[in-house]
Length: 136
Image 1 (tube, rainbow, N blue to C red):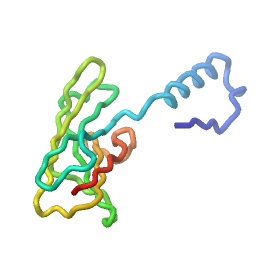
Image 2 (tube, rainbow, N blue to C red; image 1 turned 90 degrees about the vertical axis):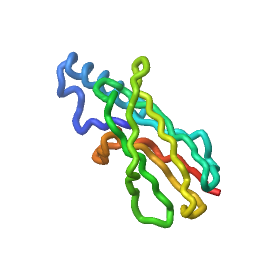
Image 3 (spheres, helix red, strand yellow; image 1 turned 180 degrees about the vertical axis):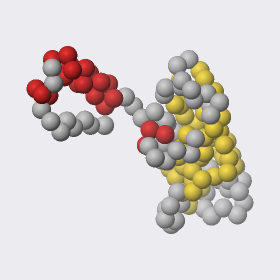
Image 4 (cartoon, helix red, strand yellow; image 1 turned 90 degrees about the horizontal axis):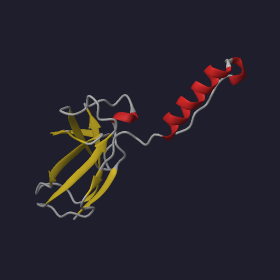
């Protein structure tokens, strides 16, 4: 993340400039709120693999649903799966886990998975990075 100020900070009072810089630094240094990982990057058709991750901050997120998006490079866009994941609060984070079963008719090849919280695609904070899975 990067921060750009479109004006000189000398236009602010000392306290305002300090507050602005501190808040901008905190925001820029915060990792992406939603993460995704997998326990298998090369599963076979008919097998099940697990997608999991965390969400920060968890306040208000426990009990919310998520969608897992699946994308194949030969297709033009992400598509939502019909499956939902429910968060569970642990400590100061919300954790999620989803078991994905590879169906018999699914073409072999490379797929990308990512999680979307509450199906909100208007902000990357609500979207995990892609996880690459090669189906064998």
